Length: 323
Ligand code: CO
Ligand code: CO
Image (tube, rainbow, N blue to C red; front, side, top):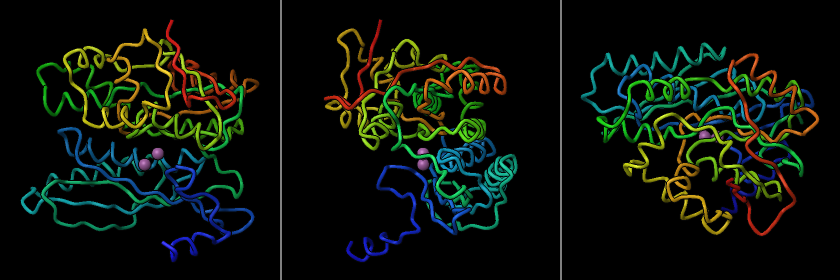
């Protein structure tokens, strides 16, 4: 550890794991800094190509979350020895196509043998020095926007274990969302000088918001009825279908969150549902709110609702309001 901390005192490291951000930033000069991220996971859908697209979109998202522009990436993969070559190719091709959409070249990588497949990218990007977005700069009065619905953990768990309960259309909508790059969110944040954001992944909406509030020394109020949710996820929850990570998230979060008495256990689980390639959660100053929502709605043709607001730090990291 002592060796690690002496390296970490390098003045060129502008952002690292200490604020709970998923990307590191390394200053090259006063103009430009490097953004470094890595993410990979086991398949969550049946089709190899789609899995590759989702894994790549998910990995690229951590660059977008700090306002960066991804440039080059390396594959990181593990495949069973007996996995047919065509499947491996389709996973890699899915990742390649998504990287291409992000104007990012995959320039190499490494694969090992493993019984369970895993795939993702180590992405390198650029950001203007000093302009990086972090989860640690939310300010009192900022309004919280979320660019994708939540519930992918529930839907992909149903796909894995309870296919008969899952509607094809609900699955398709969730898959399209997971495949979608968070580049628009990044563009709008850079355009309107948004300072604080995080993408929603394994710790769920509550987990990532909690981290953002702790890093910013603030608290948040969220309005349960305003939070966008994937169609079908509530019905699946009613059948007790959800991933194991939900309970781990809730156990950790319990003491930091003020749950109202009228919020059902089902609604709690939804808010803590681990996401794959989830949306961008942004803290937006009120004066730029309309410009940001207009940009997102015009370019993405879907309604963006304010889901909550940032307040001074209180006893609870997050208070949930339900009308
Ligand atoms: Co990540
Ligand atoms: Co992230």
